[in-house]
Length: 104
Image 1 (cartoon, rainbow, N blue to C red):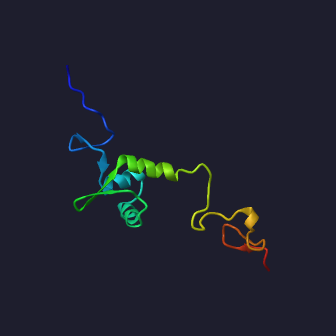
Image 2: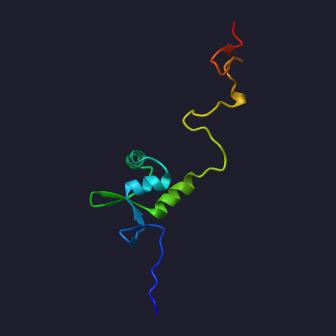
């Protein structure tokens, strides 16, 4: 009878692992490593300390993504285009060359 190893999506040094370091977590979330550390300091991203090292459980990263998955578009921090209902500042608009229309 052959011994089968339980497959996990991640391995470190040939062994299955349930945790990632900051660099791996950044790649998993498609952000920079600095963003990972900022999110940890802000308390946004669940993490585990192992000695002086920070580790991230795959389950926690997946839960983080699931909690923040949106089915509708929403403005965040005032970014994005203003809706037509909000108006465009008195009817003035700007063409591609920066010229303002609606003013003389």
